[in-house]
Amino acid sequence: MERSLCSLVTLILATICAAQDGSADRTDDPIGFRKPMNGTAYHVYPSKNGKPDLSKHYVLNHRVFVQKEVCATCEQEVDVNGTKVKFIRVHIPGKPCIPEADFKNLGEDVADQRMGRGSEFQRCPECEQLAQLSGGSIDRCHYGRSYWIRSVDFEEFDMEYLAGRNVPTIGILTLPWIYRFERGDKAPLVEGGFSISAALGWKFRVSARQEMSLFPVVAPGFRSLNYTTANNSALEGDASESGSALTIAGGLIFEWEKKQVGILLGTDTPLNDLGKTYAYGGAPWLAFTIGYDLYTADSKAKGPTNE
Image 1 (tube, rainbow, N blue to C red):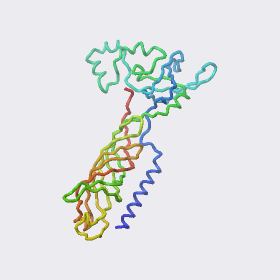
Image 2 (tube, rainbow, N blue to C red):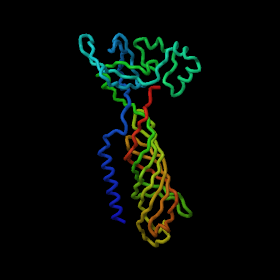
Image 3 (tube, rainbow, N blue to C red):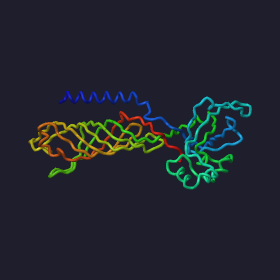
Image 4 (spheres, rainbow, N blue to C red):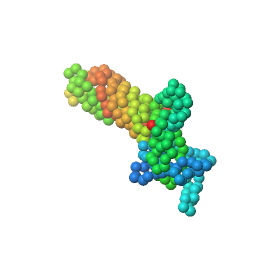
């Protein structure tokens, strides 16, 4: 048993080290960036003849995220007061406003279908004049359009916006302690011990800015047991023995950048003869768990837009 246990521990540690080697790889890439909350007013400019129109500008706020466009003409150098300044083109995701005249031409029934949940347009008659003004803040009137921004300004945009993902995941968990519920004449028991479990779950992203997820999990695993006269009727006096058990549990895990904490409710099945007389064998327990994400399936789903 000790040799098998050492082999299992070695395998688990090797797996964790391999995962750590690849931990620099993002579980997903940012789909856009927000301006830093440093009090600086970052301006974007509309296009005119394929270049920035510096006669107009709008101010980005921290609630709007932008995406850098990649194309042959998406970078331009413009003379600003005798100095060459590099601009890049960015896109502001979201449903573009449809002109009120076009909305009326569609007819109410057709327009309502195109403006409904999941549609590609929005009706916002108040934006027709507002979007043409200079100096205002970027809002929904500007969604679905592209603008120019100074390259040096965009380099400061370090607030990442990440796509929501609902995907399967596999990880590894350990249970530092478990709380065994009262059983018969046996009082509740808090105990530690070695444990290792796989974590099979379905991950739900709960933050658009951070790699934070919440997911239900099923966790089959292995746990060491300590038999004493207090919990095993086959022992007498001060005798104690070591044992092991297979465990199965389910619960809820919170993950931040692959590191996991959570709560599990489970039960165990002792493996040796002393397990047959173990007072808590097969009884439910509650456990705090910590873990690490080993694998999360790639998501090809389109990311969210500004709302």
